[in-house]
Image (cartoon, rainbow, N blue to C red; front, side, top):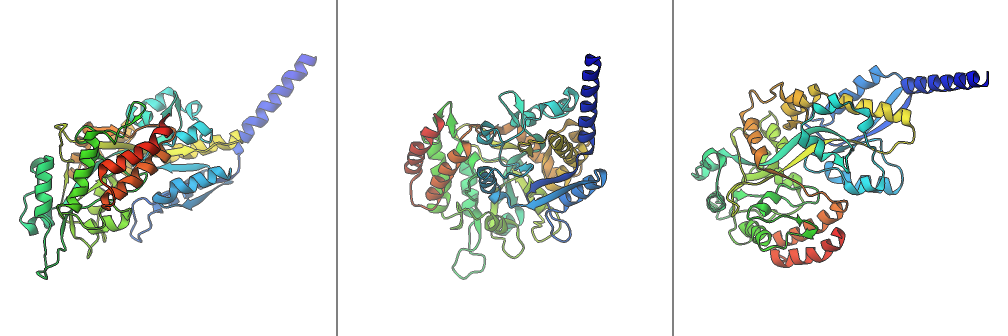
Length: 429
């Protein structure tokens, strides 16, 4: 009798638990950052639409959207974690990676138990690898990307410069063209058109493939690598494009992301012929709007002493922050899956300029009528991943701060990278 009563109690507990799981109600806090704009220039229109759809499917579930600029996301999340007041869902930028330090702190949920082997098999291995740490899955990949060089061919034509054949060039050819693309277009004696520009900012790596081109790497084993002769030489060469050759504007190497992009793309502000960007920029500059550039080419990074181009790859997606309420966690994961379907990844590919992380989305051929994206997809073969380290955010901050000093002409690359090594090496131990 006692055994029967115990079984009955267990059955009732399971029933209550299952009901709670199915009927959990409450608020989910979701952070997101700007995506592609709609006709009203709302860069959060996609996530707002998906939130409305999910709330309709789940009566009693409300989703609070916190709009956060990409450049501020890392710092704001660090503050939230320090205050034990983190959101439920956080996006991972396609330029970056999941924060290993957050994983070590235990503030990110492992999601292995919520995915079947069949579901995981639909993701490209490289995408899953970007979200896997010590054998566990800590996020859901949404998109993959590489960095490419964007060329404004109207600027090339105005300067009488031929673009690189098939978008391929050596470093020497790149420098020659960048110099020829720098000129006074108005005849007032002041240079107002430039060959090249880029920015330097923690968490963003458009400039970094240049630093790899002669064989350098930021971390080699457990040692700092950007102070190697190969890396130092490559960093100095790019900085000298502005400091010595004068083929880049004074703002090159600053943290002004918007200003640098506007110098290439924004109508009325365009004065730079070549800039490196993540592939999201392809969709932006080829779509109607103030950043529409009518005649572009997608090119590879120039080849250095390695003899082949190098680019950096990334995987954007979602991470779920630690939850005490496991029933709420299940609904949160359901939302993340809802945001990451093959159809949504196809939409991101066609509208946002990213490559799908799902095989089924890739099979939908999102770039059938987009030759620039097809060209960018070919560069995945040259992509290397970002370094992985629990202290990467702190390491990156120190490297990028020293790089900014190089591009400002305040330090040589050798001085800056030796100073970075002193700060970084203790973080690598």
